[in-house]
Length: 337
Image (cartoon, helix red, strand yellow):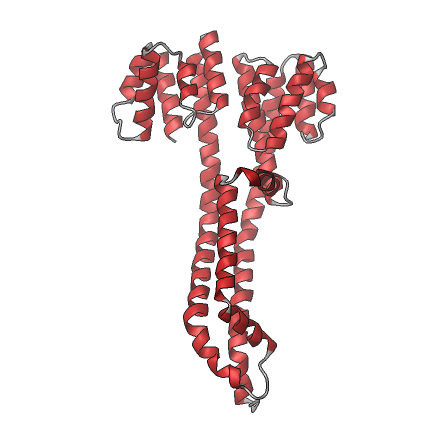
């Protein structure tokens, strides 16, 4: 939300006639916070002779390439306050989407973590003692109990598997290793369920960003060049660069897009038709609205399934542990020894 506040407050101040450096210095009062520190750095860079967009480019950890390109266009066209308002909307929409997703996943995640913790404590402290007497059973140990004994005796294998799983999750979220980027992209953008949702979200963001850049006065090739390095799926980023290259070599947009099935037909078709009539940004906005409506519906269905699936999986695991633990006792009671 810091970036949203930054863009929105700068837009209001610039519309009121306050100079950019002065506005940044006003917002930089609290330098202990990241928001204030960024404003202080921007004001210092601009005072040193850099343009606003160049200053943002030097703070690449705070501003992406699309933001820098839009600010550059706003400086050239004199519409900086309007661009800042649109950037505030862009950040706000994506923050609300992430918050909605996190709120929906918090309860299943907490249930899963607590349940796994209880299973780990049970397996480490209680089950070894409870199952010790089963080793001397004359009538043989039931196969569920043997499986559970193997799991208890080879705890290091379970810990290793948990460690590998934890590393894979961290790698998917933070991108710890460059060597796993292709695997990460497949999981996040081409796998059956998660990949479909993330891919649709990617093209939704792409339509919104492209529409915003074209509205600001960017050329299509300039917009594609700016969006390519910020695309989270490297494959789609390469496609955007190839489309840009095709356009620079004289191909029409429709001819270029036909050769790239990675781009959904609703996006490529709207972009091609919009270019023919001279208003691609309007059709892209409409497509973005349709994609967002469909994505929200699919996300609601997906989130509604997570909780029962989590509970069912944990029920099977916990029920299996209890069954394996009680079978020897049942055998003793019924005269199995």
